[in-house]
Image (tube, rainbow, N blue to C red):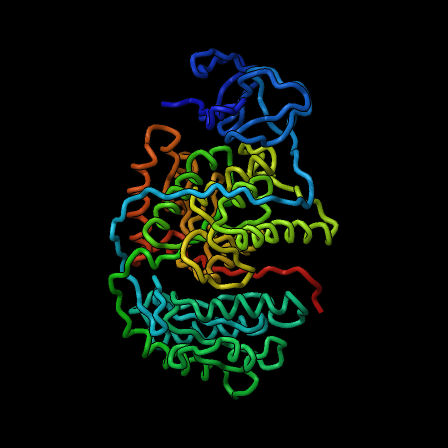
Length: 495
């Protein structure tokens, strides 16, 4: 069993795959190195002397510079390395495009073909509040509808509560409306009740107009102030929707129509070695079959952005990627906040030292595929292939944004674990086997054996089978637990 890993031939550090004690000896490419400190799993060990100010190399790239001389065998972490990153940069386009080599497999999953031609992987009924004031009404409607009808022949009945829809201005107001509209149109919902209060600035008539040519049998509207008994009226509308949704049946759908979001949270030192590269391998596989993936968490691209920029299919997409990065940095600057206040305490405890360290691991979820488009926050998918999406690193906000863009599933890698799930299936992929064994009710797939003896080709076969199963109706753990949440990005004032 491997005890350390050197990720790239240029690296001057290796990663511990188990806990080591000071004085133990490790073998690195035939050279024995005595450890000068205790080293926890996921943390870095210097394999050569690194001078003060010298680059610390991991993944073949600098992840920071040494703040003091580092001896061979020494622990390399926040105490002796810091970021090299600056603020807003000018970038140049140096295309380095890749051709994917996965053979065609003609795989299918069992999904729902909607009237619009879009495909869903769930057949649920959702209540989408236009404003947080009606969250309680929505819950009451669902509670009484279930008691009266017992809709056990559909995949689920959910309300996606939030605190917005009123007292918002500018971008915040537009973002709220965009995300809620995207959810209402999502094909994982067989039907939707849009529930308003009646006096909010997210007006229900404007919301309806913004949906465009929607299916009026499947999306209904209720303004609570305009009816006598809003719960009774809501139940009657749900009955109309349910009468349509319960007729839907799964059918074979080509995997080329699957849209998958890529996300990480609670990362550790193994994230960039096991789970993230596996997700990247899957992303490349799905794209090679004609499918679509989306990579987001813009602040966790800082330090690795040029790798993505050089994979843009043309200068137009490159320019959009430059704006994606620099506009997000400017957002930090405008609010007088540090751009590089990352990684989190949990990331650092897991062995991630700098933002470059985190970003170079994070962006591996995008594999090596070329970047075909860049989406604004709240924008829906238009182009098959690898897309980038403007959203923060926050788990709930970013995962909601991925679903709102049109993703059917989010693949969520984690080294520390998290139970949450968004409004679409959110599969948790453990970076290490210890987490998977401690939290089996959170973790949907264990990528930990990739640090032990399993190959990426072996793991990919299992992983594809798992994802096809979930797309065909198998529930993720958060769905079994009933953990379904949304969160909307906020930037400005609240009235």
